Image 1 (cartoon, helix red, strand yellow):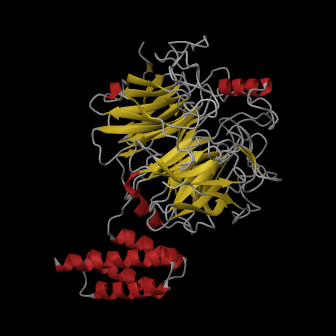
Image 2 (cartoon, helix red, strand yellow):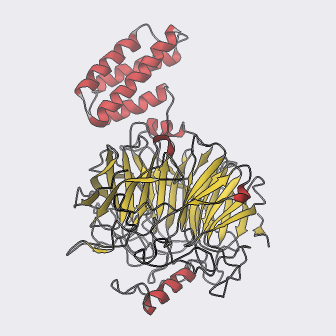
Image 3 (tube, rainbow, N blue to C red):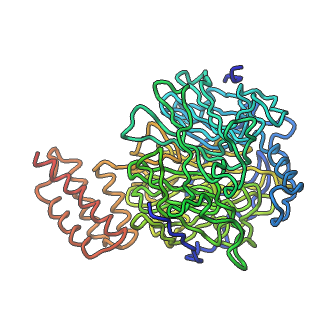
Length: 616
């Protein structure tokens, strides 16, 4: 049955992170506090960003009887085992409540594809100021995370109700040949008529997956499949085992799936490796990382590391960062089929390592903690500032070094699920800036150029869906794509936002970011951004040097006027002025340090390029 289309290598050092630098305390007059509740008419607060467009969920992707979603059940006691009836009942109710939840986003050309527990929706995001729904595909199975390569779309499926044929009836039998849990592959060469062409079964399903492109292997792409749920019985899928590794060295836990997708024959996609990236590389013990439990009095209860929730890869530098339940890990992915763990970190303030984002240089990584699983309020005034937050690490000699925490600073209510979730870099030259989803905590943009002192510079938020009841909603993902921020709202639909100039982010910096145009964007597959050597980019660096008082206003004015003359002159550059200015900036850079030195050198290089153009 076709899917229903609705038109329209040494042993890793384990680092224990102590409490570090705190995010700034929330401002007393923060407009996000006390917003009016409402599904469609809730209060809105923003600072240095604005809502451009909002698209409600299409028909068939919400329950007409409860369009905002159904209430969450009471949270079970934390110390109950996962097999306790109360825990199982809670998870079943949450699963039903998420039946129509929007999930992650991927982009290709003019299109944004938004995953859902019920299938996926494709939008044209470039034809006009407002996104236009192109196609909806009903294909339940959760969690529905998507990625795109060429004319192929990959989709994660984890729930036991998923069917090979994308049917909506679920699967009733405990063991069934009709069940599908793994990664679906669709042909989207005709974007209006996606066709499922392959379905790679995995033992734990696919909670998320990561697209890995190997520059040395143009014939294939690879997927890192991250399964986090229970292991299916071997009677349903041969080779699956839920045994303890002490009893079965072939257990399906404590590994990831590496799926090879031959580009000439994607229907032949198959698992080629299940690397033991959590093992002791000296003794071979499979389960060598965090074993679960708390870190002492007053610390988080952290999940056992037997799987990864998300893996982000940066092929240009050969590194991957895995958010793996009880640990954040750094991987060597120079051979994508055989990733090797380089380092691992624990954190007494993390409950569940959820996702990772490198900075553009690959010298830092931001890990998120999904305390409460994303369905609970974890940003209340009473909640610790370092729990359910981001942890920023520097990467030094291919090792992780903790620097600081960041958490969305505005206190949220008991009716708003809120915790750190998915985001991406904003390509401002010379700075490390990230836009991030916080579920019903809204969208937060923060600068982590100073790893130890990340600071919020913009936000957008709505009031809770309901005034008295906890209903899961808010932003699952917020990503920058070609000048705009696209946000997957779990309950409401698709939002498009834009940043506005502020004392923290100038018009030149924003304009320089919009110079970066991507043909495809998969959030867990990072690529390095470069900027053209233009006067616009130079002015962005000038603004940064003025903001930090690295340059005085007089010197900045002199450089700015030289750029004006160079841009307006028929000659490429006014005499040797650019050479002289560049030399002066280089001398200043020798006396500076950190980001400021980098900004001086980057500005100097652009001025040198102007002089070079004149000499050619």
